[in-house]
Image (cartoon, rainbow, N blue to C red; front, side, top):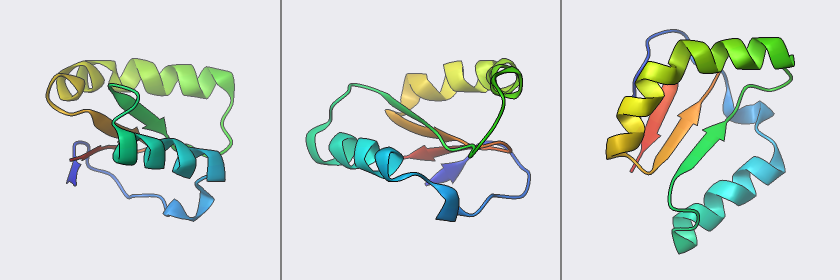
Length: 80
């Protein structure tokens, strides 16, 4: 696992069961081809759009090399 942005990490305790199921399907079956797991907890649409604007250059770069990327409010984490 590699972290691509430096800030304090949020605990994984607020990850939803459906997020865990989605990553399990990816890990077990390789479906879908690429997975971006957004683990922000409750966030407004405006704040979510701002996160995507903030991380878009990094997302574009890391998704070229990694198939599974997680985005929190403060960082991107790549998974192998």
